[in-house]
Length: 478
Image (cartoon, rainbow, N blue to C red; front, side):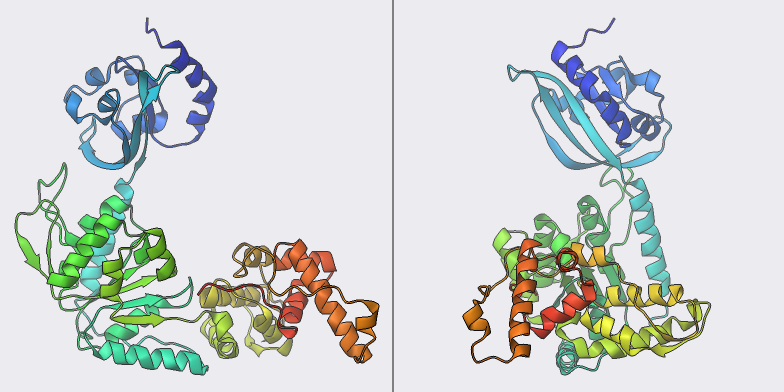
């Protein structure tokens, strides 16, 4: 009969139901190294049944496992592992890519009484990444790519495109900064297509879409035997040789990898994971981020030397709310683009719908605008002009670009003498209306939809009034 430490047993009884519901591989061992908790997800991952593990020592369950190679048994010695990446062959010979956190468990006397491990099977991520790699390799056998279509009418966007064309023709690293949905990949493609590398590969990698443990092997490739299950794999640098590698959401790249990327930018050389030979690749790096570089540098999430290396060419994409004159042409473009996707004929856009578009803040920028137009086209019942834009008002509030704090330059409530001074009736009414709006927005902590409910008006109407009275909602971080 297995005797479990009373404190460990009590904790297990309290949390067991929760552990059963989280649907991630999870296991707990006591101080003797015996499994006291081993869920179904762990069993499926390892090719065992739960009954084969519970109550048995780890080294009996895994006869080929050595104590020094087991993170759980090492945790009994006080070691901690956070987001550790491992690959291993399970009980039935299947290769598993595994990312886990493993820590010792202590009693009230700070004595180790066991260890817990929670993990994530990322084998599917590895397989999908391999598929993307193979598709990229096939795609760029035919490297002729058209210029990306960037729709605009504003002077501000023309200036950005002119700058992009100049940077494109000069073979320097480029950093593109802009909010989500502003078109960073479109501009990365424009840089590539206006460069001398246009007939070579353009490869894109989203740094936030991969677990950090896979970014290095994806970029640099692997050598067979580098770790369990490792094969000879090309990396994206090798695949993009002669062309352009676009690193989207660079701000998600861990600092250790930023250091290795900087080394490549400086030397054009790199090492495959597990390799013993330095490799060379002639690749232009274009990176993008959706956060302020100043904030990233201040918080230590980005290496300053990497930023200054990429900052040779810096492109700042304006948010859609900063170039409202582009909204009508974008709206008509998206209606034409998606007209064959809907069951009725949409021939244009009404003034009312256009005013709705112009009044909205679009925190998700062009991508959000396109989604709203497609949704509105699908939900319209009659053919003809698009009559009404169906806005997800809660989504606007969640992603509101306005800071959730008191508004700047708060106007004091006017006295009756101030109201009846040298102002006519219209001016007096507008003055008072502006103050009511500011009070409501302050009460709503800057949330437009909440303030609109307090004032009993639509969100669109309130947005229009805020713009009309030039109410400053705080500094918007670009």
